Length: 278
Image (cartoon, rainbow, N blue to C red; front, top):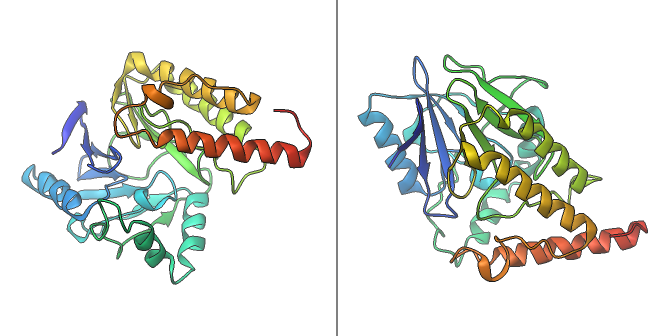
């Protein structure tokens, strides 16, 4: 079910990893951001919109990871946008004819195996490089593009309602996950992205992460600071003391400790190769 988090902005939370689909009401339909994961959830979302007399006017994918690139026929044929770098990354991924099958195989053995609609995955259109706002007939949605987590990742700031849609950042359950494959300096990329988000934090009344709980105004800066502290601890090779890792992790999210351990190990090996401390 859709839940209102601010005037004209609603969220639909998936059963899978607390994935958040965001709906922003416009004058001739809605903007739909990262629409969901499982088939029945997207059908539910489409039904909720239909029941309220709404159609999808535009879509947006915050970044080029499979769970943010999905779509369902019931959501219609509105243009689906992404940043130029995001769209380029998606094109590269889908140039492999086995890409969708590989994702499906990766999900085997999970609770969502066979429940993710793949037919319309990744059919997004690149916005011109440097585009500052979503092109649609609705509230201004500022694009905050950066290179943390994935190529062409973008947060959206819905200025009128003070909602920051953060993509896969600023989560209360997931630690920052660095892009350790496609960037020369993943630590600095992440810190730079946090500075960009900090620029709008004073005007943000609501934070919606890609995965996790929606937060109020008092949590925006706190989440930025917690993510920054985690990334700095990674850079320095020390225990982050982060509540999302270890015995304090939210039940069901214990696997985040494995994510942390993997990142720390890869960064340590990278530093050894490059002959840098930390």
